[in-house]
Image (cartoon, rainbow, N blue to C red):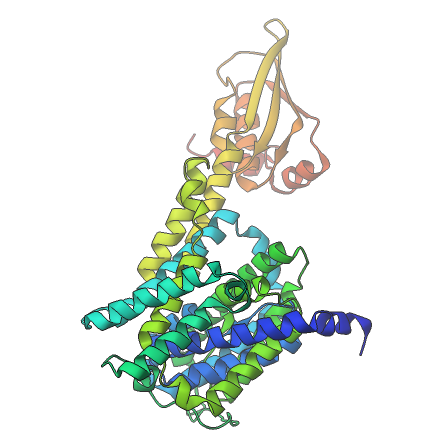
Amino acid sequence: MSLYSKQEWFSNIKGDTLSGIVVALALIPEAIAFSIIAGVDPKVGLYASFCIAVIIAFTGGRPGMISAATGAMALLMVTLVREHGLEYLLAATLLTGVLQIVAGYLKLADLMRFVSRSVVTGFVNALAILIFMAQLPELTDVTWHVYAMTLAGLGIIYLFPYLPVIGKSIPSPLVCIVVLTAVYMISGMDIRSVGDMGELPDTLPVFLWPSVPLNLETLWIILPYALMLTVVGLLESMMTATIVDDLTDTPSNKNRECKGQGIANIGAGLMGGMAGCAMIGQSVINIKSGGRTRLSTLIAGVVLLMMVVFLSDWVSQIPMAALVAVMIMVSIGTFSWESIRDLKKHPLSTNIVMLATVAVTVSTHNLAIGVFVGVLLAALFFANKVGNILYIGSKETEAGKEREYQVVGQVFFASSERFTAAFDLKESIEKVTIDLSRAHFWDVTAVQALDRIVIKFRREGTEVALVGLSEASATVVDRYAVHNDPKAVEKLMGGH
């Protein structure tokens, strides 16, 4: 074993072991809750969380990050499970894994640099809102006992850490689950528990090939879902990796993470589990609890399975109200509250991008569409801002005979109209010099604008000289400009 891998595995054994156990305990209610969101048996989420956490510990590109069954992925599965059943979900999970491995080899993780911070913030906020909304069915049409238990759970989660000594050493979500389960078992109150949601597994997962017909019809059914799961899974994993990079001040290999997520999802699909990805909430819990290396992720997965399979009688007694309290805590902890305060400080365009990402994601329940809209808006605002950085000045170098125009800034599709408008094409003058030494031409639209200026001046009998083109701009202008080609000029100016 190389020094590098020893560093990634055994440099923080005590911290990783404790944080791994904490994360495993926090993963159980989440995996069950996400299974319920997706409309499948709790064991599908639990087996998935075990498989993904264990496999990603070896194959992932970001040590200390937790991957398992997630709410974002579960939300995308609802329709597929309802219309076609579990076997098709397992097949979609396998296809998702293959697509993610392909994305890793195509180095698609490098595209993350085009996702602005305001889109990431909007993504995180939308995720928090969706996790909260997913709890509402458990809080509607229920007796007052459920509200009392949920409030008590939230009270324990937020107040327990203030206790001296013990408050910092035991994670409060775990205390919440243990205390509320004890209250539920002693009082015998009539509220829903995990056992009511479906049978918990009492065996280890086994190798399962999805029993679906291997034909094109099956592929067309699962492909749209697999594509959505691939995009959302990679987006959430890349964003979580970025957040963990910031928290630990260490880099990660995001293309390796893409491949690792793919291998983990294939493993989950073959073991009867649903697709998953990195978890923002659990990864933050892991880092805050002292987890740093791959060992913490491995322990989280193994302990999760052991507890579910060998302590299932206890786990099935956990009241749903306790899980709702934990999930509300995750949604409150995931939401970026600074983004509300920053609305006053940040420019309007940044705020619009963030709020649009939230609004679209929450209304469509699809994180991929929300991020796409956010990235698109951010790009448009950026193009508009850069398009405004254009100055064109002019001076007469010889009275009534020669004029020089100086172009400073970026000329592309968003600024080409301003560029064209700056020239006085009606002026009767012998020679025009256009100084482009401080300008940059980016695209065909910019070159066409330059063509029109040159051609119109020449139509008026004015001699035109272009000076100072940079090498990069000259490459674009030489390739696309037509002002020195008489036939192309006629075609371009036809009808003018």
